[in-house]
Length: 206
Image 1: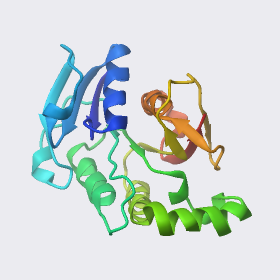
Image 2: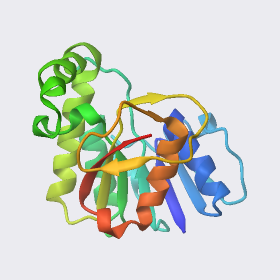
Image 3: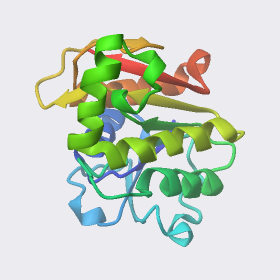
């Protein structure tokens, strides 16, 4: 399988690239600065691309069997459109190709969360941590839902940089407090073959 990884220079993207190569896949790594992608392999192709520049994506997904978007801007407090405009440009450049994206647990609908999380924890995260990112993630998921594409959105909780547990849970409702970056990378690749999850958002945790 040939996997295109958008945002390959980031922490999650770099782990996805390595995991995909270890599983024997071909990979195209897309990043604004391809030199920041540390992986090297004969099955790895580097490509400079900015998801906010639609022209830079032309032809980027011609060989791809799936696209994994690991776009992320951290704890943004200012309005952003990296997720929504970025995925809109990816969808336009990759018609008919399954797209797997990273969202976040707090970006899910309020009704998904427990009363305590809904009225206390999630509002705190929105106000003080990454409200701008969460809002744009919601717009991204709405664009995916309105498209004709096959897609899966994974909504992790707090991400931690520790060795992989080698297991994770996927559920339609929030299901845990944390997830390891390495396990998220593996899950992003795993769900490419989970057609039963296509066109859905899933909460994921260890």
